[in-house]
Amino acid sequence: MSQFTTLRYNMTDLKKIALDARELEHPKPLELAMKALRELDQENYFYMIHRKNPIPLLDLASEQNFQVLNKEDEAGNWHILIAKTHDIDLAAFVTDNPDKE
Image (tube, rainbow, N blue to C red):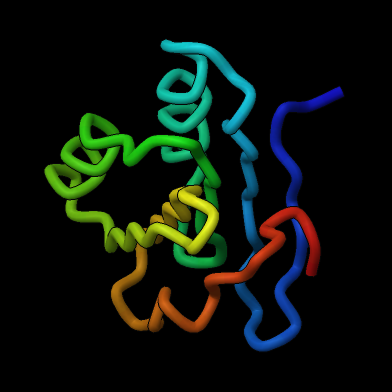
């Protein structure tokens, strides 16, 4: 079974590559996130939920000119959204349950 879940988002034609990293131990979240970034194109985006704000991932994605959004929710979980395209508002994609459409 894949660590990633790919869903089609109803609001756009973008596909979501989702990763729930809250229960994963270092360095697995970064390894899986970097694999997902290599799969990104203009038709998808990466959505990770994590118990920490993954600064190294955010830095790497920014250095590669990805659009990045990181937001902490009320429960202390971090929602990290990364896209290759800069033509979308990633904030519109933040959800309480990133594994669902």
